[in-house]
Length: 172
Ligand code: FEO
Image 1 (cartoon, rainbow, N blue to C red):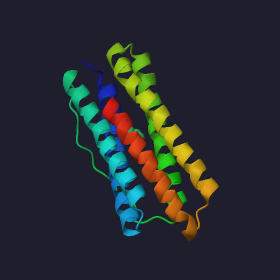
Image 2 (image 1 turned 30 degrees about the horizontal axis):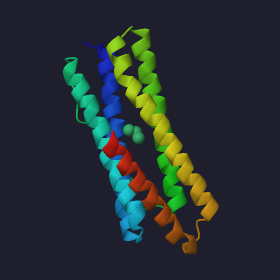
Image 3 (image 1 turned 120 degrees about the vertical axis):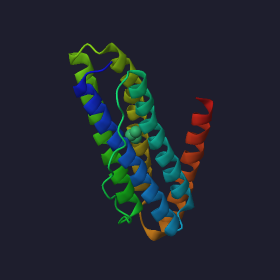
Image 4 (image 1 turned 180 degrees about the vertical axis):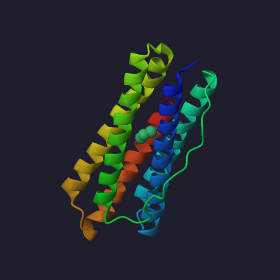
């Protein structure tokens, strides 16, 4: 069992993960339309990952006899000013998710909810990795530059990163 307060907070987290999944799916479609196939593949994989993050909470809530609720998703943007701006938006969303996971952990600790505390440990590590990945991508984009000429190289770089992430996931 988890408290009502915790169940409500977990349901809010479901909403954040679902929004991330839709946002990244929208970014994948935009990248595809812009001819950025590497970026599109990266965003599709990220979107799938976020859906998996959401489902993990569904499963946990079911385990602890709480009711997971499918969230309403606010409309996400369909186009982005540039690849750099798009990744800045991803990074900002990941920071928001991290803050929200930390808030959940605070509730778990204040309620001596050891089970949810244990469940959230995975998300804390995952968020640390996600933020670090997005920061390294933004650093690369800043190095290469965001001009139309540079886009080809950025797309190639992101594709390499995506392949590495896929291999990492296969090994998990
Ligand atoms: Fe599941 Fe990247 O937040």
